[in-house]
Length: 338
Image (cartoon, rainbow, N blue to C red; front, side, top):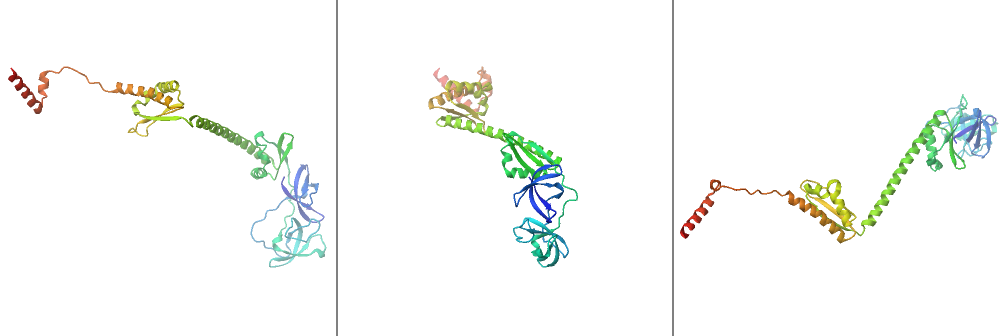
């Protein structure tokens, strides 16, 4: 849960603690230094004060808090301190201040570095309003909430000041301390993340299926024979056949693994028929079946030359000088024979 500071009115100091539970105007806390657990009044609890970064400027008679290691009496080691004792500055010079602890005898007066002093924070004018909310954890997020960094991120995102994981057998829930808006935000974020996890799982399943299919293909085609041949772009449709009928029939009858046509990149390039099969015999048979279709279409596609009768007069009308010389020589030869 969230870390708070609990004020001890008799000793005049704040001690860090962790809130474990809330019950009306009391909350159960575990004190970080001693490990002690006890119920305290909510009115004696405050959030850890936040102070602006940069050098702190103090003057005499300022009411401050001094960091000390012990939670039993003021003074001692300030470097490792976690408790903040109520005090007043009696004098200050440079980086050091003379301190008098509130409610303690003069014998406890101390000289402390300014770095171990912060302004007096007091208790909030209105007691902190603690609300405890139990939030159901979706089944696919049970492992996710076990990661401490995920819980810290969720707590910061929803604005809660306390969030913990509670296990009850196989069931897991979150206990949130904060306002209703924080609880609503946490529920929404959990639902969104659960959907996101489902989406990731679906993608992982698809990737796994593709990997299995890839391995099957590699095993199938690992030792296969491959043959390719060109086909004119205009004849691709005839080779493939309506709805792939020709190419599927060739695959089925030849026993090859696959046959397909790679479309040309430009009109000036031919398409390529690619055939994969278990052996040389099957791929050659498939090639022959597809080439028969290609060649038969090629023959039908050739233009026919029509033969029609042409009159002698028509030929004479289109006679060239060379043709005329040849004709006259032939006629002269015929006359000599007579």
